[in-house]
Amino acid sequence: MGRTLGIILLAGGIIVGIIVVSLMLVYYREGSLTGGAATLGILLGMLVLVLPQLGFGGYLFWKGGQETAVAAKAAKQRELLNIVKTRGQVHISDLVIEMKSTRDEVQQWLHQLVGMGLFSGYVNWDEGMLYSEQANSLRELTHCKQCNGELELAGKGVIRCPYCGTEYFL
Image (cartoon, rainbow, N blue to C red):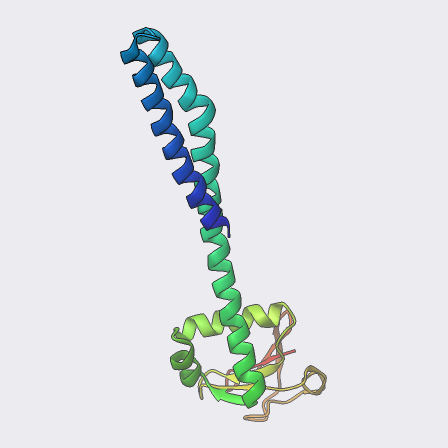
């Protein structure tokens, strides 16, 4: 919405600028205005009418681009969450292909979802498998489900097996 409004304001500012210049030139050629008065009219018209509209339109266009990028990222996170929750487990390579992304992007989105408290489960990066599981069953874990190694706290909401690299997201 912001981009569209920005484009409208930019186009309107250009149109208003053309109208101001045209009117001043018409009045100058008619003899109603002197050259100095026409120049002053153009400058004041640009400063008062055109520049604020162009500036605000440019800001809205830029801000709208940022909002679009944030919305696209949120859509990818929702897509990732839906895929994993509906399937229960999924290969990371399948996620990368299905979401038209990279492994690093999938990992980044996953960690962001964990940070927001929206995803619980675990991932084995070496095997490339992602599992969705209820957080309350993962909180009771003391040993890795993959290799039975003792788990270590790796960060906020993340427990990691130092032996096989499996990460558990609470």
